[in-house]
Image (cartoon, rainbow, N blue to C red):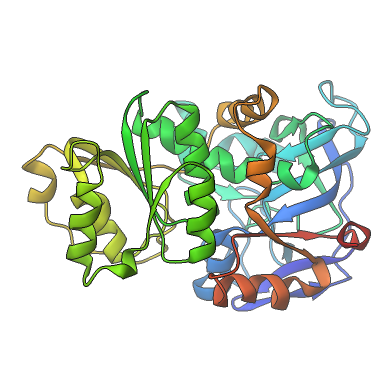
Length: 379
């Protein structure tokens, strides 16, 4: 089948020769892909990977699958075939995919290994062996079809457009981060970075009753959308230095002395500093960014003196997916607002040059780009 696939380190390209998946297990679901979003994780696999993909010549420890693999884990599509044990889905259902692969999935792939302590406690999103379908575990959604276990599939109402449905996976990341931070109604929050996750954080924070949301982002198109979504926006490059930017941001909090929560959706040294220093006393900084193998200096007194907290948020749970779908169906999250995040729709064949490279080199005009195997959807 046709796919945009990861063949090895720095080698991502289109192919029409990737083996087509088929039903093998009783709980398998064969999905015909309509849309699949490009995530920052995908870009990092090209720029500085492998991060989640196995190293060249090796296989993934959860699945035993090697390369090549179709990339893409923000998937939406239609069910076209089901295994004999599938009970919750039927042919024609619109679905999105929860793409993680953890210790609990070893049986599906017939691999052997010790169950990590996180999975023993049911904390599968922080499995020590965590991987993603479309990013190492197995082929994903930058392809014509994908096969997933029923437990990783969520039905969505047919009235939700499938391009918007492809946003549910990244939005689940945002919902989970808000829960990890323990945000309460009436709290204030600063979002650092206005990419898809940063913009999704606005919707998630609003759904939890956050009273004041400020977003710091250099790209004009992202600031404009954030403002339409109800956030107060700031261009950090307007200030003379990082210290000046932090001072200005702190003053924008309700009491003028820092926010209850900060969410770093960028992941560079200066945003790490801002996430800590823009907090009020006993505030919580939540890292949502993918850092890869980089590290930063940290001054413990910045946390100790005002009893600030710093934590990370990893992926999502099944409950987070359900909550995002519920938020759409109950009208708490607006479909049209979410759709504005989509700034590009590209075919698989042109995915590398017209989508990946555009996202890397043209952040001023792009937010979320979706790929599709169905060229008729681009007309």
